[in-house]
Length: 461
Image 1 (cartoon, rainbow, N blue to C red):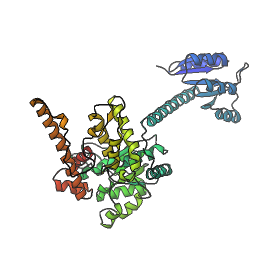
Image 2: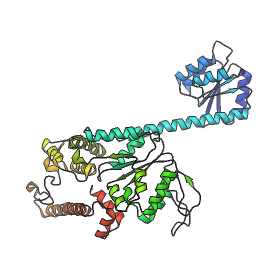
Image 3: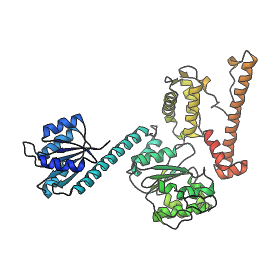
Image 4: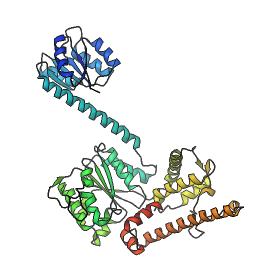
């Protein structure tokens, strides 16, 4: 469909001349006065309005411009025989998109109209994107002093371009904090790209971050654009930054200091305009002392630190989080909202949640699924949160099967439940043994580092 241009002018010759030029690419309509123009706009909103500044009737172009903007948000190009800087400035102040003389070359007019339409499209796209961002926006939940301090730092740091280092245990919500920084920043209309440095094999990580040229290494059959290029003008979030190998650390340091990098195998220097937020569950300062992490990179990253407290340090937030996750799970499952008994809530509050927010959310989702009524009770909690010394699973005597078929089904369910809990207990002890070091834990267990990371996330650790 052709873009719609409305010409408002009392000069019929001018209307005919402009229409003749514009008809090929645009749908043109015209009005001789303000009253007719407003009626036409109410019937069909144009994409651009050409408005004569000096209408020969009772209408004044500047006054009509003000009226038109109250009817619809349409870009207006002011047109007149009497071009002057003063009237141009006045028109622009009142909201006109641009200003031309009737003596302007008609080809230039078409270029100006095309530019105005493109600007309108970009503006509408930006508004749509902002609405989507607001819709998808996820806030940090809690009222404790510890989480209020985190929220204060997010708002304080958001509109700077300095690097941020987010620290905290696994599952506390470090990526959510990074996303909130991005949301409150002046980069929010540009990409937020998250990359988990521990989930990508070390030999591929540098390529993921900075890209590579065709033939740069075996298997590089085409050029790859890295995450730093994809995040241009936006924010890149580097989770588990401690897992960067020495080469990648050097390149990241250069990006921070010089704002530039090259793709692997490439000679062209690429300018970088991204906000870098890094996160870790390790003590980077200790890793620096052990010569496992570059000291200069550490200080470049740790410009604006944010420490996210573990859930056990903000137990007052647990009831708020529990009710939030119950509501979220019920909404996703399209079932009526459930509540939780006081006894069940007490158990959840008194548990230390080593897997933090991630573990709590997974647990609540499971409890919503397992609960048969409209209230989650102690009987619906599928793991013993009070002690690690009891059985790996609870057995309800009232659910003893009456037939062998039911018995066989229950045996499978119990076996699955026990298997999940044994797997989770094993992974927890494995991580504890190697102080959260994924690489060492994977080597000890004899499994791929990427697969171990997937297992850890699945178990909510």
